[in-house]
Length: 158
Image (cartoon, rainbow, N blue to C red; front, side, top):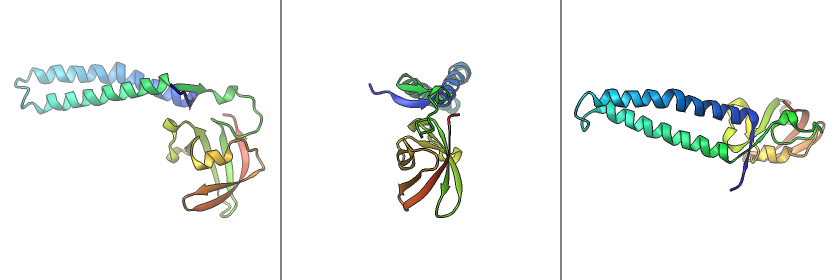
């Protein structure tokens, strides 16, 4: 099976979520099911059915996280040679040459991508355009709204 790149930060966050689900949520749901069973007739017991549904969702998420972690190639960007080139895991500060707006993105794995937190997937158009480039270089990103010209201001191995 193919390994998928993931930052150490992303793998740690998934591991933390997995531990929480197994050690906190799973026992809580088990207790809720046991308590709901004590209320009698299971056919018409909404609490029981809700707890069972929550149990199913939690178990599915546990399996999903375990699958993601088992297929992850965890990359600690702080241990990579700092060549100044844009590679997986780096944080890149860019200047939009059309609007003079500065933006910062961290290049992460697909499962970690979150545009609200400026984390872009390594497979996104912007990351593909940046990979292999260095500070001072200009890149053209082919976005759905048209081409965007950026200058790479800084590459950080955080």
